[in-house]
Image (cartoon, rainbow, N blue to C red; front, side):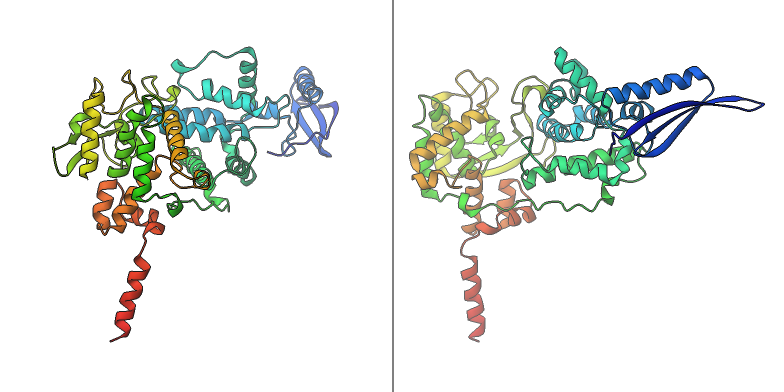
Length: 454
């Protein structure tokens, strides 16, 4: 919404006829004459007094209606964007996982402070995000008490939040799209982040269509190019089997106990292509570990990490269904003898937690992502050259999963079987790992040579 501070207050004009008497308040906004009629002198002077107070407070005026923004907010019908965002999150709260709640709220940390009127005394953006994080975007029974400064920030935000119906205007939508295109520090955001936030914004507006607040999604009418996301695994991040074994050996040398406990967890990510949250919930009853030969893992659940404010239990880890699968769906993964032996040794040495989880701390808890990252960073430092340490090579534990899937594909395992074990669709699998398929070009060239010789 555009605003102007070019305001000049006029006078109260009395106009009488035989049947009635009216009092007309006159003022000028952006050099355009404005007027409003009242039945009594008191109402007219009260209105003019409100205009005067708004100008003294340095408040912007809407050049379209000629009203100060605070008065415009009061007159608008329907929910504000903040109110509707709160309703959207609360309606979905019990239907979504903690990480989904966190991701949606993170998008709103950008959108809500951007979709506001230019009222004076705006709090700092970080103050507004903090109020949203701990109070405004939380269920009532989870809201933290606010300090006086935070309460003032929330009051400003509630007053300044634009009416949801303002989002039919293209310039308002572009204002929102700009907000999700930059980081909180003001730098360009990663393409994947922008696409994710834009998808959430689109879904919020679709929900408004369902609520009959819009006839159609207004975002579809804005010509805005969605940045291209990175979905393909970079081959530079993929380790070969020798490097993988060296990294796993180095993991056990990190710390006094933590590295020993995490070595087999990382090995499960590499040899079975488990996602880290799947490895975190791997249990004894999920594993068939014979004394020789191949074993089998039957995955049932995952154990992702999220901030405690978003979880149902108030703990950082919660057990959920597998990614892209129903609540009781499983995934079977044959595992090689080397992983079978490592799991058997790990279980014998550390035993399982009370709930059957194989990988846990000494007190039975799940390791945090920070703990994973620290151990992995140290293992890379012990394994790689200085040039490799600053490279993309196995920069994250998750890259072990990429290495596993790439190895299976290049070993000639059919894509359907690889997708089944990794928990992908075949289409996604081939798209994501397209650049990691080594040797295919040479094979195809030899086939063409053979055909040309005929």
